Image 1 (cartoon, rainbow over the protein chains, first blue to last red):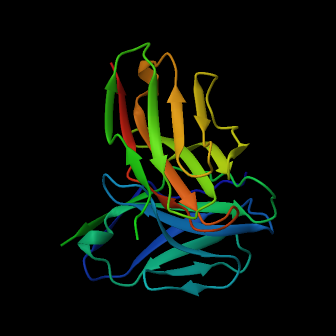
Image 2 (cartoon, each protein chain N blue to C red):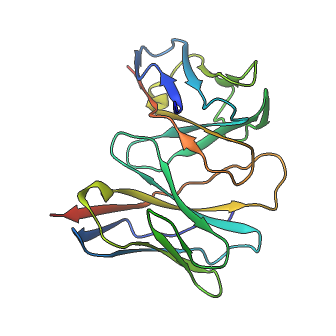
Length: 113
Length: 114
């Protein structure tokens, strides 16, 4: 399974944009890039995913490098509720049957008021 | 609608005992996943069900761990002869179908083995 590399932690001020990077230099052509986040004392929740093109939804934006070896999750205006651990995950749509999801340690985002 | 629920929310047991952890997935979701999360780590995959069958159990650490999903809905994770190293939060997730569908996670069961 292709691995991802993320910074251990990042800090942001409230109301400012946050750019969370992820490196995935061994990504394969059939890997989708997924982001989940985990708020304190909760299970992870889906944020966004993409394959090649940049993606936007109500929670965030995902910018994918042209060579797909890295991506950036963008929170346009961080709030205190965005303080969480953010996981960048690769999921292979080329597989049949099971789809084991490999989580790394993620990036812990601290948001200052 | 109702999300994924897990019971109990907390379980304290003694070393050597047997425990069962239950997961109720979102109604209609055919895929179900179990993960284990230790403090400061990301979730670690244990097993994945498609319907009633375990499609991938490669993450189960040893034969003390077993999971079932007899009717394709509720799943039970069973741990025999618990050890202190089994202490963790056990997370369950479900998705509408296998593959790339969004996984919806439950709140987890915190297992403490004394």
